[in-house]
Image (cartoon, rainbow over all chains, first blue to last red; front, side):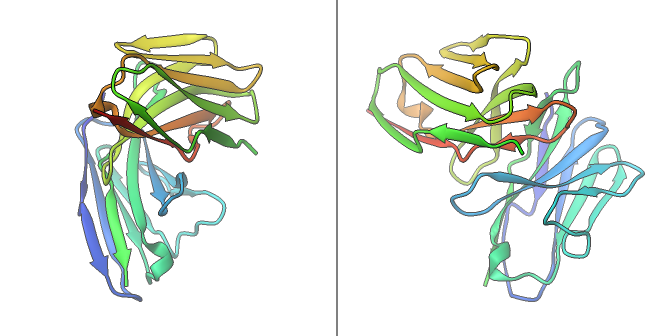
Length: 115
Length: 112
């Protein structure tokens, strides 16, 4: 398994500002994932972050809006830029572990409210 | 495009009852299927992982089955307890992909 922490756990932000969310894992992992869970909706993958390379974004998500850093094998950040109320969501990071790297474990999430 | 559906969206049962949560997916080309639990305001806890070659997995009072050809999975919870109250999410990993495709979840309430 993996123990994942996220900071901040929650925040309330003003429209037009940016927030950087941190994700820390207790072991080295190759791939880290960032998901968004909008109110009443399921989780949607934003991007996949590999250490030493550019993040890969899913359809509908762009680097200018959600820049990601992956400086080492245990840490990643997601920035939500130029926020609007539609960005109010829970943002979760996850990692793959296991003998076949096939089980995903999730952090506790960051609950973001944009006013 | 893979789509995952969970029925029912919400379920309320008395304590002690056995129950089944359903998950269906549109594309049978999956690598595995994972069931998660999400408590209010919290992250996800992995409950069970079923590989595409497996039919079921068990952990304590939980049993998950997989019928890949029909695109269905069920999560069986035996002797439900109030502490089981949470939202249960089903997610499939498509073949050749690292990402998970999630259903919207079933919100379970177990009444004492």
